[in-house]
Length: 505
Ligand code: NAD
Figure 1: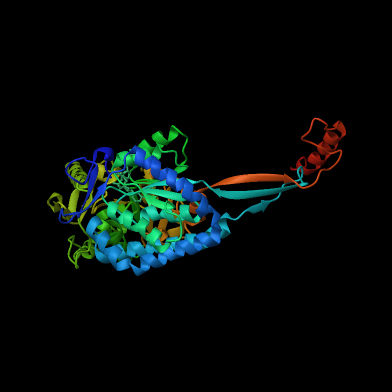
Figure 2: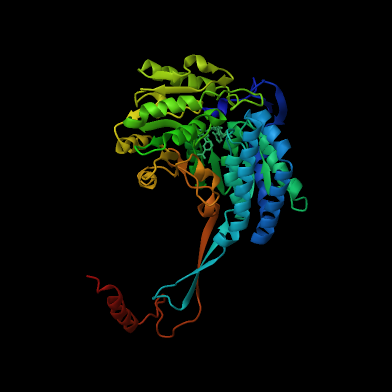
């Protein structure tokens, strides 16, 4: 999450070659030629040609192709997980979990596209009773997907798999920090489907400039996942051609430990939500609000859960290095600001920041106007605040410009509290549950984004409804939409309308 990623590069110098680096060791693991604007336009042109064949396959043909891709990925899971570990830094098991979660989503999209996107007849209503009315969901055409590095498969897959299942071709610009993973993923689709034309799912590689070229290339929709700052820039650029977009941006997710919470379960789940993947999870907990009467017990249990949590690159590490070097400074500055404003570190502290690793940091008594509470930290730190009651927890959780997801721990009021949260997603008595349910739409409110991926809404996000009203037969003498309309027809309609709508009291 950077403020100006167009200038950022994982290699030392900006060049036409992008160096892919292992964040734990600094080792260069691959070099990728950067696609300039012409190359991006050419890729989009190839995708447009390929999209016709993909569309013509229909739901059943596309389902088969997507499921073959799923099988290829599952059968090469060890190889791909190792690549994710190498390029992104996360532990091998986490890499595998990310992959199978993506696979489950692709399976769902492939199997449900027909049900949710098939043409639907609707009632034509009384005035046009001689019509047949149909909504047909058409693929938008070519979707440009721009992805982040934190979940380099699972996150863009929420757009890619659903856009493909809906009948679109996809041009994917992976994050410059996870280019090899993105290309492995797209190659896997081609390898699983050698009989299909190339260009149905392809990549363009590079920094922010390549992403910007994709936005300007004439694609029919942009699906972006990344920081709010970049999302705003992309939205402004997309306005030029009125290119529609779905934006999955940053978060500052709150967890509420309500007055009847199971404290031990809450500490266990929230510790994982806050620190897994080095805290580099858009829907991970960054703020905890715990009711006063449970606060001491919760802080003790939370500290206990973190005793064995430590970063590293070995097999026993619970999380890996910071994937993007510049994020280390963001984390450092949020910890420093919190402490300068009166906050206290009860686990770790400023000394925990040892690039490329950051040990867990837990901050309490942090004023609500400090950076660690107001801005996305995207690192292994979390704030805990005592609150008077559940209502105060809800009010503070909602007092953020971000509104992506949330967590509630409560034995009896979980749903009641969840319904009062201004967010796109909530997990009750567990963490991140919504992300694993393919049928649930995923997305944010406010500065966390626009639109939805996953579920039925995620499929519809990549289609445009085409409404068709077909006159089945004429009613002689009763024409309404004609200059030959008779006054007697309007008189009759007036009576019918009065009968239908004029009697409500
Ligand atoms: P980022 O905004 O720095 O980059 C994301 C992508 O945008 C990269 O591929 C980058 O090259 C590209 N890009 C940069 N400038 C561009 C421009 N001007 N035009 C077009 N493309 C451009 O984000 P990041 O650091 O890769 O990812 C971390 C962020 O992603 C965090 O804020 C996190 O919360 C967010 N995220 C959100 C979700 C979600 O579903 N809401 C999921 C994962 C990550």
